[in-house]
Length: 218
Image 1 (cartoon, rainbow, N blue to C red):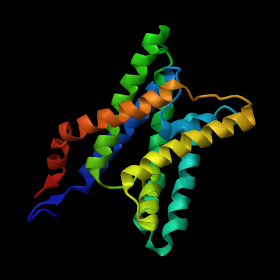
Image 2 (image 1 turned 120 degrees about the vertical axis):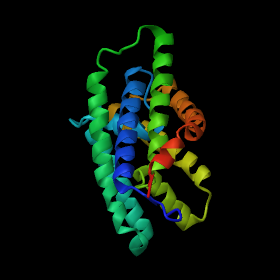
Image 3 (image 1 turned 90 degrees about the vertical axis):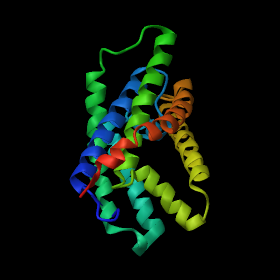
Image 4 (image 1 turned 180 degrees about the vertical axis):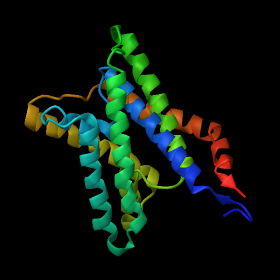
């Protein structure tokens, strides 16, 4: 509430939906570059190399585990409304698969083109994350797990988020080495995307603040 103003839940849902769409397409673009994928998507992407799951379906499966982790950490303190994270990640996974299908012809030529596509995908992904932050409706399961860890460990979110992303990449690499006997889906683009998304997000959050005003209704 803001005095006699309130947030429109319908608009919040619309902004969240748009943010998920952009984030899904951003992940797809980053991955199509052929230099790896973003850290948050590294584990589900590796899973697609040895299962019949699509990228989006693997993303859903991994994020279900993140929600289960939140429940295990918080117990009764887990807000029941946050079960809707499962709906969020279902939509997100669908947009990843749609983005992968639409971007089939966007395979870059040459290394410079691959780097450019990673950067473009990172900006689109960051825009999607910024809109989800402004929607302020539901946690992304990965971020929800980090928040739960913050609550239990009493550590700062920024440090835990960094450690969480690094841990996902390390787990993805270990899983790939154990099952595929090689490192698949993880390359220099994964590191580049980590820095590019962070930098773009810092720039885009102030630029997208007008959406927060759009959410307020009489």
